[in-house]
Length: 168
Image 1: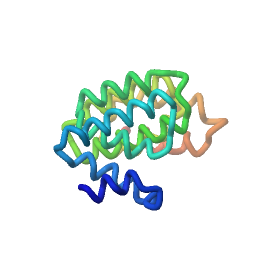
Image 2: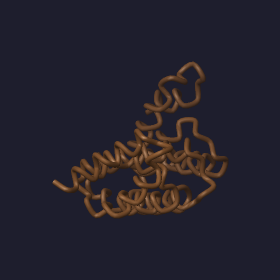
Image 3: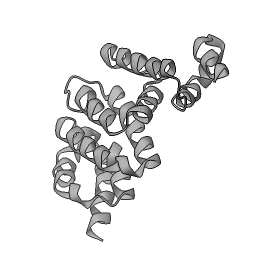
Image 4: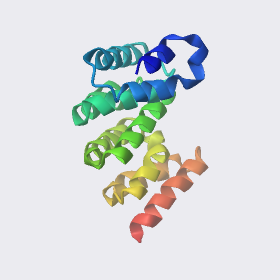
């Protein structure tokens, strides 16, 4: 892990930084966990998207379901968050729910909150909903699909795939 910490501190390892962040989350050292918490808090406070998906994934790795709830509050329920930030957060939620099946329910609840506040991001979560066979989003997705059909035809197509899968 000393190499991982060095990769985070040295600019020459910039292209490897996301991997180092994810590896740092595997550490049991309190200082490493605090670094993840502190850096992620700064990211959410400043609205930074640089390596945001990696920091959010690391944060979720160490915080679990309570971390999903905090991310929901800090990002998904806030209308002032940028599309870029939210896309990075959705990547992290998708990764953690794929790795930890026990987190799928909290992540699905977070996705529901995202869709209420940022319905245009529905295509970003449709793949996970299909994979997890979460057909309880049908009404919400149907309404969003109708609303975005003209301005985002590819997004509407992705939502149509979800609706067709849900119908069997």
